[in-house]
Amino acid sequence: MSRKPSEDTISLLVLSALIAFASSGLVQKYAGTAGVLGYLAAVTAAVFLTRALGGRLSGFCEKNFKILAGLSAVVLVAGFVVAHPIEDSRGPGKSSDRDEGLNLAVTRAFRGETPYYPPNPEAGPLSVLPGSIAMAVPFVAAGDSAYQNLFWLPVFLLVAWRYLGDKTAALLLMAVPLAISPSLLYEFVSGGDLITNSIFVAVFFLFAIHAWTGNPGTAWLRVASCVLLGVALASRANFVLLLPPFAALVWRLSGFRQALVASVLTGVVVLAITIPFYLNDPAGFTPFLSKQKLAVADSRLPSASTLLVGVTALASMAATLLLLLKREGDAVTRFFRSCALITLTPMICVVVISTILSRQPDFTFMRDRFGIMYLFFAFLGWGACLSGKKAAGVVPTDP
Image (cartoon, rainbow, N blue to C red; front, side):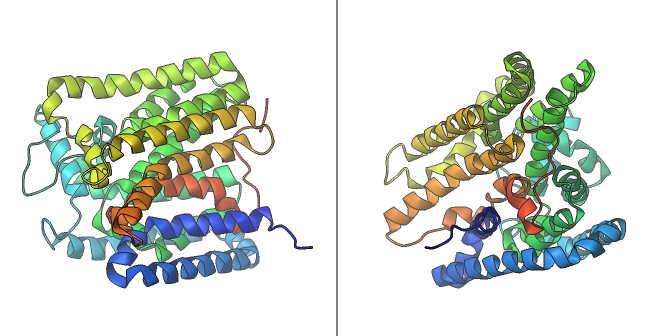
């Protein structure tokens, strides 16, 4: 009689698949479909090897965490200082323009102009909502929005340590994905904001969960957590669909009234940040044009992009119901897994549709590194398996 795979084994396989899928477009571009399969095998081997070494490295990592964390920060800064100017010097159309777009948006806002600039050769249409622009302000003031990654990656290391309760897993989650994911590495080198964006959404979710569940928080702390979370969710339109599962999590752990107040307050912040920019120039509000990124199959499959938005909304509703109804296991871990899967849903749909229409595996949509948006949720949801420990969590499983 065959044994069922352990929970750790399943988590390792899921983590491997998610890391590999995020870079599937880039790998297919340069190595073909066979390269994607080979890359998946290599990532899986690397993740399982990391798990095997994690236990042996645990004592060393625990003892030298501060040194290793500091060394990681130094390596990040040194790598960025060397590689970013080289990548950036390739010019418009040949290098990523996400950092240039944010720099231009913040600069225009400082001048009292709308941050949503008209078409220009320096950067493509800005797809982010005002929350991302607000989060980039201090870094643009310091010289470049690309500096965000140098701040938020170490923040993720510390937050992962506190949440997982495991210094080894936190260090491995910082180092291994950057080493084996071309998408993550290129986004970091190019100064793109997808790494930063996904990290601060995850971090502010944890802050809000801590404030509204577990030990009673003060009123100002709860309000502050909703303001920060609202700004974070008002960064990209797809992240707004993570608000219902958050409400379900708070409802389960602290009751309906707390969930209603937390979700309504957060939603009000999202609207208060976004609506004024839209009303100022509806035609020039380029984030709404980002739906066109899902419209790659519309010419051959009518209304495909609208269907994708609907399917993603259904995924959000399903995750919300499961968080409310399913009682076993750690609710916070399941919440982050849900966030990863909701964010992943439209990407899977586009790849499946493109594959069917082209009659061969087609990961072209993933070339723009959109998969990074779900990775850091996945790291918090499944990352504890790298050392074999369960997430310590920030709140009890149930009240």
